[in-house]
Amino acid sequence: MFSLVIPVYNEEKLIDELLRRTIASVESFTADYELLLVDDGSTDNSLSLLVRWQAANKRIKVLSLSKNFGHQAAYTAGLEHARGDIIAMMDGDLQDPPELLAKMYEKLCSDDVEIVSARRTGRKGDSNRNLFSSMFHFIFRSIGDIKNMENAGNYSMMKREALNALLAMKEKVRYLPGLRTFIGFRQDYVEFVRDDRLGGKPKMNFSRLFILASDAIFSFSRFPIRLCLVLGTIGTLVFFAAGIYVLIAKICGFAISGWPSILLSIYFLGSIQLVFLGILGEYVYRNYKESQNRPVYFIRRIYGDSTDK
Image 1 (cartoon, helix red, strand yellow):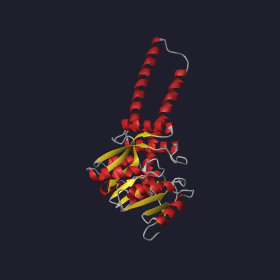
Image 2: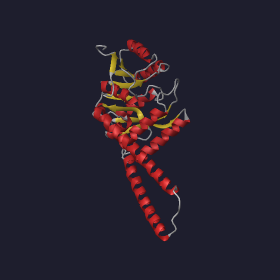
Image 3: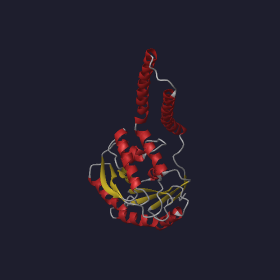
Image 4: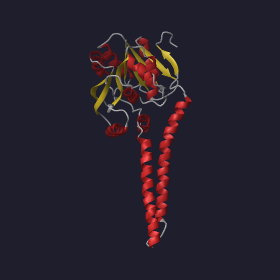
C-alpha cells in the first residue's frame, strides 16, 4: 500500500483543487493507496471540506487534531498512522506539485534507494522568501552536522524501514528534513521548481520560519555553543592585552584620561554575555521540552477509520 500524508491548516480555498490533483496523480501509478489528511486545528471550513471528501472516497482518512500543534507535529501524526509500505509527505498548499509523486515513486521502486526527497532548484513567488530560504540553506550547509539536505524540505517519499527509523526518534522539538537525513539509508533526489500559492496567505510566516530554522540549527549543529567558546576566548585575549597596554601606559605616563573606553568595554562585555545567555537558554529550553515528555499532538477525532472514532 502507498500512504500519502498531507497536513492542512486553514486551506479551505485550496482543498478541492489539492485533492483533485493529488488523487489523479496517485491513481496514475497505484490503485492501492490511502490519503491521510491531518487537520491541524483549522479555524475555517477546512475540516468540513475534508470530511466531505472522505465521505465520497473511502481511501481518504482525516485526522482532526485537538488544536494547532504546528507543521512538524501534524506530519508526525500522519506518519504514525500511515499503514503503507511506501509513505510520502507533501505540503497541503499546492506549492509541492502532486504530479511529482509519480516520478518519486518510480525512482523509489526502480532504484536501489529507501528515501527519495524533492530538491528545489527554484521557487516561484515571493522573492523575499526565496532570499531567506537560500540564506538558511547556505548557513545550515556551512555549520550543520548533517549534509546533503540543501533545498530539500518536507516533500519526500520513503520505504517502511526508513519510516520506522524516523519514527524511532522521539524528540519533541522536531525538524523532519534533518531527521530524515540523519537516519541514513540510501537516499536520492528528484528536482523541481516550487510553485507559488494558488490562493490564500502562507501559513508559515517569517516568525514561524525563523523558529523552524532555529530548531534546525540548534538540533543539528554545535556551532552556536562553539561560537560562544570562540568569542569568549577572543574577548578574553583582547581585553587581557588591553589591560597590559593600560598598565604600561599608566607606568609610562601617557594613559588616556576619561571614562569612555571603560564604559564601552563594560557595554561590550555585557552585550556578549547576554548573547551567550540567549544561546545557552535555547539549549536549556530544548532540554526542558524533552524532559517534560509531553505528547507531540492530540487527536480529537479520526474520520475514515474502521471505527470512525
